[in-house]
Every structure is written in C-alpha cells, then in structure tokens.
Image 1 (tube, one colour):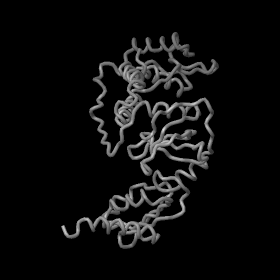
Image 2 (tube, one colour; image 1 turned 120 degrees about the horizontal axis):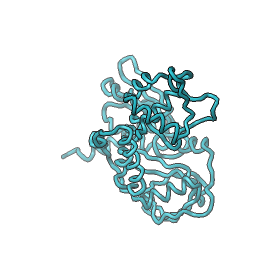
Image 3 (spheres, rainbow, N blue to C red; image 1 turned 180 degrees about the vertical axis):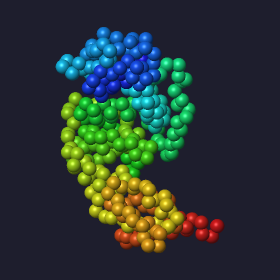
Image 4 (tube, rainbow, N blue to C red; image 1 turned 30 degrees about the vertical axis):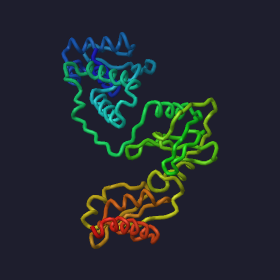
Length: 322
C-alpha cells in the first residue's frame, strides 16, 4: 500500500467536514477508482480510521468517533525527499562517522519513499554536493559516548589534550550541549573540577567514559550569557563591541552575512558598510577581520585595531626584502 496515498487521503478527510465525492478523491490522489477503494479499505480496516460512506455523496470521517491518528511516523514524498537530502548532508559532515547507527534508518526512509512513489529511480544523492574545509578527524568512539552522556544527562570522564597548552589532563565534566561550528565538533560542559563552564574540542578527547553520576544542570540563560554572547566559539561575557567598516565593494557580500545574532549593520553615505559586533576574546574575530585584508577597517576599539595592525605588520615583515 502506498504510504504517501494513505497520508494524503487522511489529510483530505481531516480538511473536509462534509462527504467528499469519489471523483474528487480520485482526482486529488491521482489514482483509479479501484485503487481509491483499496486505499479506503486499508485505512478503514487496518488503521481503524472512522470512515463513513454516504451513498451518493461520498466519504468522510465520523466526527463523533474517538480521535484518530495514523500510527507511527508518516511523511509525504516531498518530506521524505527532504529528509534524505538532510541525511546526505549529515553523512558528509563527518563521512562514515555514524554509518553503523544511521544506515538502518536511511534504508527505512528510502523504503518509505519507494513505497509512496513506485517506479521512481534511486534517490539522486549525487546531485547534492558538500564541500568541507579544515575539518578534523573524529571517530564514533568520541562522538557516540559524548552524545549519549548529553542525552542521558550523565557525567563523563576523559583525557583532554588542549591545543593551546599542549598538555594532557584528566577531566570530569557534565555535558550541556554539542556544538557543530565551522566543520568542527565542540562540547559545552560544566567542568566538575574547575567548577566552571568550558568548551572542549571533541576530537581532543580520549578514553571517554560515561559515568553513573547525574550531570550538573546549568540554566539555559547562563549558558547563553557565558558561551554565546561573545563572538565565535570562545567563551566569556561579551565586554566589547567591534566596529568594522567594509569597502563599498565588499559591502555587497558582508551586508548579507550574519557574524553574530546581536550584530548591528548599516550602510554609510559613501557606500561602505558598518558592522558592529559584540565579543569577549578577540582571537577568532581578528582572524575573520584579516581575511578581508584591505577591504575592512577596524574603527573601534583601539585595542582591537592595534592587534589587527600588529598582525598585518608581522605578515608584511616576512615578505620585505624578498
């Protein structure tokens, strides 16, 4: 039985208070009279739908019957196609990372689509292209226990090797949320030893073990205030606001970009674009400013402008005299 047709018939009956003629149902479903009758019988006899046939007028749901819902998860063909596109995207975010866990679900979705739209060609995943940059290697042994502890609200322990310090330390944390940012996986967590919020790169976590202790809960407001108020992945309350002015040419791109949820942007009289962004740690923001080269000016604060200028001077020094 075509799942898509069952779903569509259910929606038709729900949207009509009066009997729907057979001819109208055949037209809406795009099927023959015999196919329509088989679909109605399946919906009524196997799904226990309260369908009434009023001779000469058509079919409808009995409004006096108990509330009826189709069992399980039901999707239209276009919804299944959208799900498969998203599945393809997720699979390419980290190729093969969760294949053994996701493959059965993927095959089920394809089966539902094949049943709903018979004789269609294989789903064209080759028409979806994903380009990844600067992604770091991640294994299921890292992401799966982290996600498990996060969902089950349990603490976890691990060996963490921070790139900034180059040292390895044993950490015990309460996961708060997983972040996928610029092709990297991060874990926002409560550090039980430091008694503070921290953000860890999941690819730097080793020997991860889910513990029996319940996770320490941190209010969403506190998480957002300390981990998302500033620019990028760096934690800390936003204490500064960067004022950037982009050339009229570059403005055509930057004006359509979102650098931060709380940014403010406006066009200046000379065609340049002024963007104001809150930040705490300037490291990541400085890197994004530098990639625009001479097309951007840091108008404020002076400390950020100096840091960008120093970086440009250091870069220039490497090429002088060559």
